[in-house]
Amino acid sequence: MHVLRHPGEVLAFVETYPDPCITALIQHRMEELIDEDTSMEELVVFVILEAGDGIEQLQAQMDVRVMSDLGSPLWEVIEEHATCYELVFVLSSSGYGTLIFAPKTEAAPDILDLCQEHAYRSPPYPPPDAIDAPVATDTAHRGGFFTPVQPKETNETSR
Image (cartoon, rainbow, N blue to C red; front, side):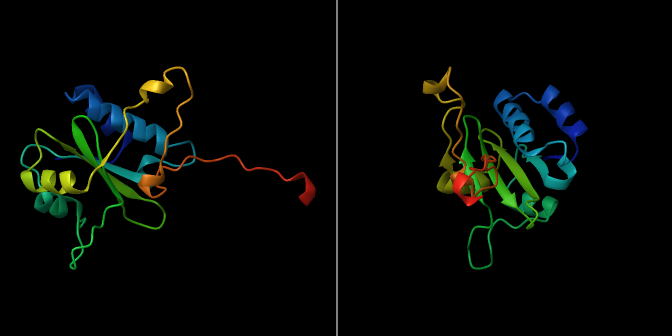
């Protein structure tokens, strides 16, 4: 299990990890989440599961529960990508969270079964019909975790 808590760890990981889909997703999430006012350490930890890593290993390593005692999911979303599943856990009201990437060819059967049952299938990035158009990403399925900032409208009559 790879646990990436700092930007330097992410850079070293993406240079050597063999799956370009996962490395591109991590880089994209970094661009979405991190800015000059927010450091990676304040907002996110990336976890990439390795061969045999399943729910028990994930919960023990990260001190994150996947389901409540009553069987309710504790993740925000599970998204299916070409070569992996992405599980999003928001751990505090500040937005701090963990993004877990479960490679389809390596993760343990228990986590793959969970992902297959609950995953949202992401559209190709960018969508094929938006080659020359600006990309508008629908983030509603993520519960607002990656919601882009919308410009505020001004009302001339309210002055």
